[in-house]
Structure formats: structure tokens, C-alpha cells
Length: 231
Length: 405
Ligand SMILES: Nc1ncnc2c1ncn2[C@@H]1O[C@H](COP(=O)(O)OP(=O)(O)O)[C@@H](O)[C@H]1O
Ligand SMILES: [Mg+2]
Image 1 (cartoon, rainbow over the protein chains, first blue to last red):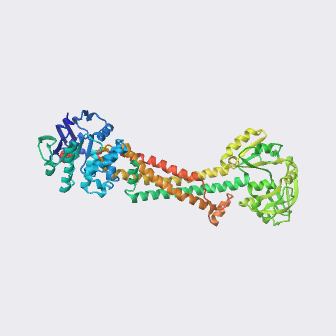
Image 2: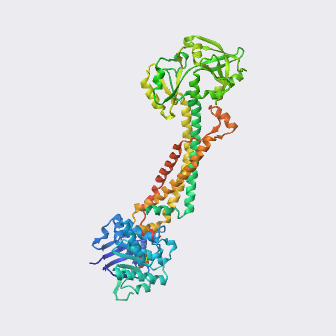
Image 3: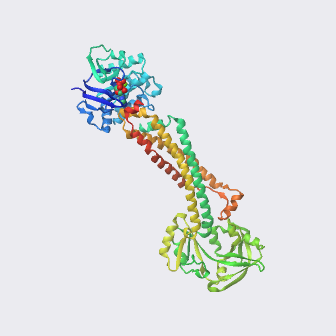
């Protein structure tokens, strides 16, 4: 069974002229996929990810996560749904500024009311997995952009979500940090079978995706799968 | 973790938080100072006219207070004193027989107020011995008088001189006698210094042809707040057809209404201070909400509930208000006590004005901790009310819009 499925998904912004930001998207993502949504600026990537993530409402069509039709959920139910099912990584400033790296990761598990032992063990494990075992007590303002994004990935994984949504996670990073982040994501995908769905218009990131979905004017124009060595 | 977040958030803009806190701190201090001086002056007024003169509660013959004639005096029957003193809140019972008289030296005459008094008990209530500035304090069986020093001065009398007292006694009897001046008294109020004449009770009853009669039993009670209860209790124990029981709030209506009016007047200034505090908190809270839109968006996206966000923001403001109020109290308590012990002297001009109210021209601060507690709870309550709008804005945050900004 697919973990994400959309049917005839549409989102229209009604301005001076109506904009069909997402225009009839049918999409299925399986567990363990490592998928990039690509397309020029304004093609609808952010809008699509926001709707799949339950942050935005579609104008038409449906989104299923597992067997849950999320268009049926109220705003409050969506908050809990996001907490337990989706890990988010945004372009930048993902972290709560007054919390340390460790606390940022722990925080979402606290919202899930997990036990202290579990929280501490998992936080440690995740920060080590993203290569930041040393920075646990640093606040975001004392970390580089790349380090912050890695903490964001650790935080996204902490609640054991069904999949991770990342909207242009490398947009603000230099090439070294970009490569580094991609290594970590690919590693988690390969070893832990974590499902990633991310958008990008950076060719170096596209090159590492195993499935590339191309959007243009809110429509899927290409959907290709390929075998790559993501070592 | 939410507490930790609130605490750290507070210090993200440490300068601004410090400024807001300082303004609350000073507003609290000023408010406490104002309220304490007000209450301090009221205490002084009440002490001077009530506690150290009239007594908080009095028992009279029924009808005496409205028509203060010697014929309306009460008969001190056997058992009356014991009945009153049996009340646990009555500390002291002081018998008096008072009457306006004419004081004369022959060529020179003035009105005076004769007080037939029990020397020991009167001293216990009004510290009369301490008011003696010349001569000696009278014993219960002495045949002599103590007079206010201004009375003696105006009539050019000295210790050892004789003063004639004349007036109307019980049931229309003529009262007339002369007494040697044995002591001069100095009171806080000039009015008393010009009028008072103290004569031991027995002698006064004899002079006024009113044996065993009293105008009043004045009493001291455990504290000012129990007077209502004492009055109610005594009214059930005593025959209210014969006696009337009154507390100072009835007897000194003018003083009470002056205090209440003055308190109400101070309210305006207090409101101005509260508005300053309110704007400080409100402005700070609104800035916090608008500065943090992006991170609110992220936090809601990753699964934080809006009420949790709102709780953090409210906590920040409560921390801020609490700390300011606490600092204000830490400073306010010593301030109250210092100025209570070392009252501010208002200067000679004010002294004349204050004489009209029979009080000294000093500003002692009340040490009533209730004033601080009132200020503290008011500021906290205000914080909650002020936060309604900023919190409402938190509930309106939409994550994608917040993050786009
Ligand atoms: N809130 C909005 N109101 C109106 N138009 C919007 C809004 N958000 C996005 N759009 C429009 O929708 C289209 C898709 O935008 P977006 O999803 O951000 O694309 P991308 O992420 O691929 O750059 C663009 O034409 C954009 O201008
Ligand atoms: Mg975008």
C-alpha cells in the first residue's frame, strides 16, 4: 500500500487572476522512496508539499496518508496528525531559537508525551546519526546553516513519522553542506528505510534522487525512476 | 520545557524586558508609596481622634449621642462593667463624665470641656501621663484639675492657681466650684490644648450632681477591624432600651467620610499608574507576537498546539509581572517601614493646614502588607486581562502565512 496518495489534487489562489498552483496532481509514494519534486520557481512545489503535509487545504481532490483522508480532518486534528505522522524540514530557521540542539529534538517527543528515558536515548541516537554528537548543548544561533538543517532532520525523525517532507532543504546551504546533508538523508533512507519527499531546483540534489517528479504550472509533466549508487 | 522556553524567551530581548520590568517596578513603588502615605495619614487621624481619645467603641445612655446633655447620662449600675469587659475583644473600659462648662478666673472666662476621668484607666487608653508637661498627674481622690496648656496660657494661669468652673449639672442643678491647677497637658491637637479640663471622676460627679452617672464608657478593642462585631455582641448582651452601643464609624462619621472621599480621590492617580503598566505589558507582548510569527508557524507545523504557544507567551508575561512586583515588594516593604519610623515632615505651611484636622504635619507610611498584596494582585490580574488580545493573535496564526512572512 502507498503511504501517500493524491487524487486530482487542485489548489487555486483567487487573486486578480486565478492561479492554479496545483492543477490535478495524481501521485503515489511508496514506503522507502527517496523522491525529489523539481520544477522552476512558481511551479507549485511548495503548495503541493504544504497540502500533503496538512498545512494547507486543497481546493479540490484528496490526499491520503496511509488510509487516512486528511482533507477530512479539522485544524486541531491536523496538528496531532502532523505531530505523529510527518517530519518537516523547511528551507531555513527550522529550530526553536531558545532551545539547544538536544532540546529541539527532544521537544517534539515531549509533545507526544513520550517517556524521559525514551526521549533521551532517541535524541542522543539521532544527533549522532546526523553527525552532531558534539553540539548537543548549542543553541541554533551558535550553529552553521548546515548544522541547523541536520538538527532539523534529526528533529523531523524524532517522532517516528510516516515520512519526511522537506521543502528546498538545501536552498540556503553551500555545496559542502548540501552534499553533507544529502549524505545523511540518503543514509537514513538506505539504512532505516525512512521515506523522504523533498523539493529542490538544485541539479546536484536532483542527481541524488531515486525518483524525480517534475512539476510545471502545477501539473506533473515527468515522473522518472532511476537506479543510483547513493553511497 | 514550556517553562524553560518562556523563561529564555523573556531574555531574548533582555533590554526591552528590563525596561518593561523597570517601568512596572517603579509604578508599583509609586503606587505603594502613595497608598501607604494615604493609609498612614488615615491611621494617624484615626489614632489621634479615635484610638487615643474617643475609643473605638462606646456605650452611652440610649439617645445620648444625638442629644449630648448631662441629663442623658447613664447610671453605672452594678454588673454593667463586668458584662462589657467579659467580651473577649474588649481590652479596656474607661468611664467618663463629660460636660461643657465655663472656666473663669473672675475677669476672664472661656468655654472648656470638663472630663471627669479615672486617672489610671484614662492613662491606659490615651496615655494621658505622657501628655503632662508641667505639674503632677492627678490621683483618683485628688481635688484638683489638669488643663490644656493653651487654656492656661490664654487665661494667664500657672500651676497652683485656682480656676472656677461653672455650668449646668444633672436635672438642672447649678454647678459651681473652684479647683487648683495641678498639671498642664499638651495634646497633638491645638483644639484640645485650648479646651480640656480633667477632674477626677468622683469629684466631677459631685460637681455635676450626678453620682454614679457617666456620659460614656469608652473602650479599647483588640483592633480596629473587630468593632462591628463588638457592637453587635454588646447589643445582644445589654438592654438596648437603656443603652446605645456605637463604634467610631458612627461617632466619627465626618472623619470616616473624609477618609473615604480622599481614598476615592487617590484612585484616579492609581489608574494613571496602572495605564502606564498596562501599556508597557501590552506593547511588549504585541511586539513579541509579531516578531515571532515565523517561529510560531514552524512550531505549529511540527505539532505544537496553539494553546501551548499561548501558554508560553502568557507565562513570559506572568514571569515578567511577578518579578517586577516581587522586586517592588522587596523594595517597598523596607520603604514602608523606614518612612513609618521616620515620617516625612511636611513643612511649616502644611502644619497649619493639618491643624484643622487635628493632626500633626507628618507623613508616616502605613506598614499594612495588604497594600503590597493589593498592588501585586492588581498588576497580575491586569496582566491576564491585557494578554487577551496578544493571545488571541496567537490563536489566529496560520502556519504557512506566518512562515511566508
Ligand atoms: N498565498 C498565495 N496567494 C496567491 N498565490 C500564491 C500563493 N502562494 C503561492 N502562490 C502562487 O502559486 C504558484 C505556486 O507557488 P509555489 O507553490 O510557491 O511554487 P514553488 O514552490 O514551486 O516556487 C505561484 O504562481 C505563486 O505565485
Ligand atoms: Mg517554493
